[in-house]
Image 1 (cartoon, rainbow, N blue to C red):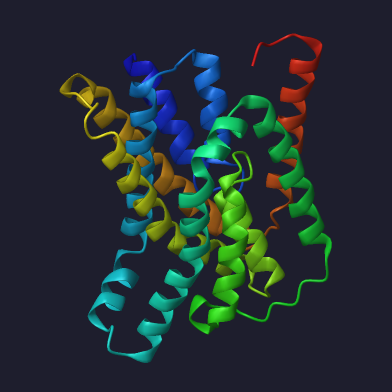
Image 2 (image 1 turned 120 degrees about the vertical axis):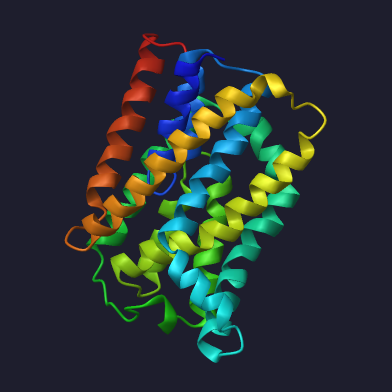
Amino acid sequence: MSWLDAIILGLVEGITEFLPISSTGHLILTESLLGLQGDAAERLLIVIQGAAILAVCWEYRQRLWDTALSLGQAKSQGFVLNLLIAFLPLAILGLLFEKKIKAVLFAPIPVAIALVVGGVLILWAEKRQHVERIKSVDEMRWTDALKIGLFQALALVPGTSRSAATILGGLLSGLGRRTAAEFSFFIAIPTLLAATAYKLWEARETMSMDEAQPLVLSSVVAFASALASIRFLLRFVSNHSFAVFAWYRIVFGGLILLTWQMGWVQW
């Protein structure tokens, strides 16, 4: 893998991980276009996913630190409990079905279909009458967290987007747009850290020092671009809906299906 490949993958991961447009889907498509295959590329994707989640930890470092210092208080306990509840559905279903899903759906065309379907669902959710019942993650009940966690489990299908699924679940549960985005960031911490640790453990015997340089470079790029993406999304949803991301998904997924159907690109 070249340094340019490492930079491109880091940018794609960082920019798309927290936007509701599917990082996994974009990475699958990028790998296909760059002609990257094999265990080395798979391991790089694992590591840069962990680098992207560190951007959330950095952006919300004060909130996480304050929570850690006040775990004896009901507010912090409720926050942590909600994160764990939202995390469990994806964790359980992932352990049961991830390999089967990966064998069947980790390909450009299923990703494109999921991009289009997800875009349509986001537009539907935005056009519904949206009653903002919850204005802060601290106002959430455990039942709200469970609903969002069940939506997050849909992200096992590549192209769906973990961020899109959780934000959609948040909107349908009465969360404001910014609150839905923030809770999506928070539940990414246990979800992606657990996924990264699990995949690194599986790959522990095949990793080599020759991969160190592209891994470090790609991780730095992923961290920086993810941090910029998080800050952009929080500013954007303060005054706009998620419709622009929905239309992006529909157009992008539609173009992939069109180029495939016409034989212009061998995805």
